[in-house]
Length: 168
Image (tube, rainbow, N blue to C red):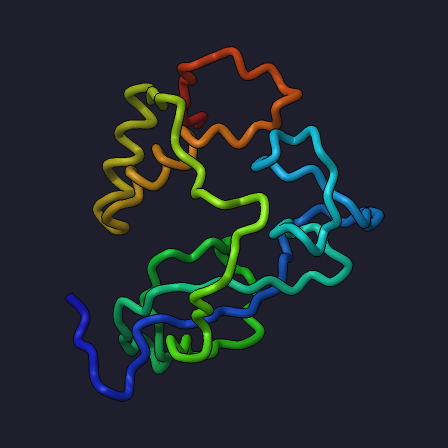
């Protein structure tokens, strides 16, 4: 359990660069998975990483801090960026200013629910056990994300069970 001091913020905003996106011609519309991938929307009405600028923003939980080899490391939960992602800035989340009680979710009124069962091969299950030792909760997160079935509606989504494996 992290120690929280009165001067430490529990939540932070991370501003980063979408460095893992394939470069290509920018498109003003995208097909969000939340709309089944069949309906086009303006990119600014979505959370798509394919934008005219590569800047992203994510809210995270500050679990703790530690010093390692002369550097201050932040232990974060809920990070939705890749390893090696360039971070532009870190800002405190201020509940009185950053939360808007009357805000609406547009086309995303409810969180997505997991609808598929993820079944792992023995090798994948063992890899998850190993990773889980360092990152508790990782296996649950992977199972949830895979179960959310983010494939667009126009893809063949008749399967209800998917098998995942680790290739060596």
